Length: 289
Image (cartoon, rainbow, N blue to C red; front, side):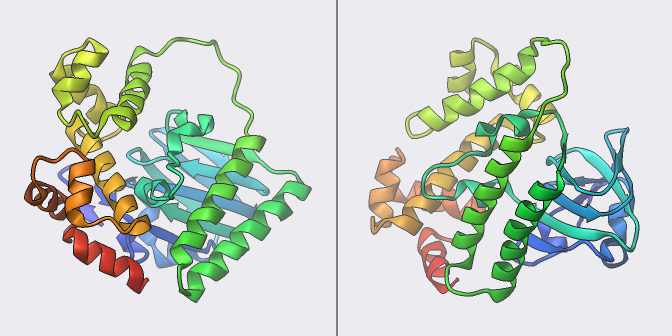
């Protein structure tokens, strides 16, 4: 947990030093991690699969009553606090966006429409679907505990199946179909990054494509996502670098060239600044998983 001048900011490291994915039984959750009862900000996605539970979650001053046979997804960078009874049964899954997006076939979370909701998603489960979801989640728990070869790759695949299952079940709340210009610009910006990050690395490039100022682009990114526009571009570059290091035999120099860096040293410096590892150290760590 990091402390800010405003609210505690929690990352997955509070649960697991791997800092990108964590899963556990929900029983006794608040005894193990009592700070979750108090207002804090997550830097990660949290999925609560509730078999039997009662309590309340407050998300940005909106109270959500929790009950049996329910899935709740809390998105990053919102203020939340959780109260769940100690006898609750279910699972909690936490993951960073980059953990999911590292899958080879270029998956990105915002392709799931329900994850484009503002801050949280609630899905009711029938008895039949609860059993199906529990089967997937139990397999994830076993895989995470096993730490067998390539277990993170398996977990990413399970997570994809889980998110697709939620997509099939999710029924959006019917509201007036109001156009949200800020949300639209953020989504367009994210899509532009995915298509242009190899050739355009500056926020000003994307601001011009969106016909807005660089300062305004940065402001809406910080207010909506909690990150600067530059950090979103950098994250996409490093994510693609990680994919290439993991799934290809390309040399560091070849990867630097493919990603549009003028010199390999610039790529190495950028990669290490973001990941605290050189590209070669990262590649070596992948094979040690």
